[in-house]
Length: 387
Image 1: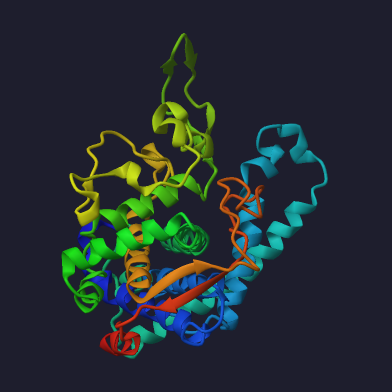
Image 2 (image 1 turned 30 degrees about the vertical axis):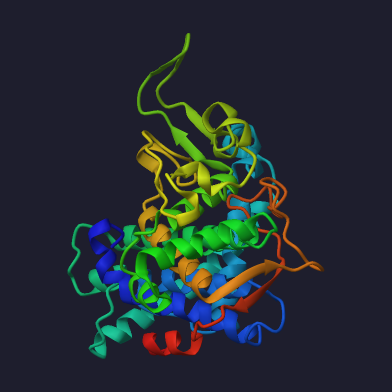
């Protein structure tokens, strides 16, 4: 379900959900007349994709009660899962002492089980009604996937939901925040011109963006946002599978390793003196910047640690990239983005996160002015998707 070959299957879903995101931004901003927060709309976008992939159901409104419950429970679990919040994982003696977080975990688990059952029941009803929506649960319920147990499939679905509804929104928000700064206006214009240079028209770009990732500048924006605003600052603990020699030391097999992705993504040795600055051009090169004919800068090895590394690298990286690519490209095509002067974003790579002890970063809220681009018929683009 998450392989590169499955992206064609998911294209209609990403088309629909990213179109709904643009629709929500356009409508909530009163067609660009008022400043708005991005957070509720991109959260709906990310969670609806996760639910569709997992159970074949979607959420159309950011006010939906199920959405609010999943967000609340998921945020609570994220805090409990943080490596810095669970000292009993490293000091066994603490496991015998009273811990209020244990009861919090039990309560959150019960609430989570309720919406998981509701979602699975909805998937069963769709199968009975003859509605065929490609999703993990449907494949198992119809007997198409026999190698996984119900517990394993439940774990996969929960991972997709918990992994996507926080990381994708935070990344999208901080990309928009970075483009909306004074410095970001130039990046924004370069990105827009790169899109037009390749597709000639906004309409052509809109029609293709959910099926391909062809614009190097958009890919650079995504990579730079993932690097600069590391949404999982401390990657979940890894266990070494064998003895590892590192410098003059040996790390024994079965040793727990905590990877500081935040520090790695801002390593001056790797990214130079501008490691703490948002600059998508670090991933690009061109012979003529004025023509915006950017190409990917040659690179080898792991370019950033936003999706982890090794055997526990994020399995949803492909779908997350496609979601971000489509959403960011379509937003740039439709709007000129400028941050609010009265409620601007915090674009510091550390302080942008309002929940530093959580497993996944929570971007501090802010307002943005989405000015519809002159000559772009947003209504016509939305009708193309048949919302």
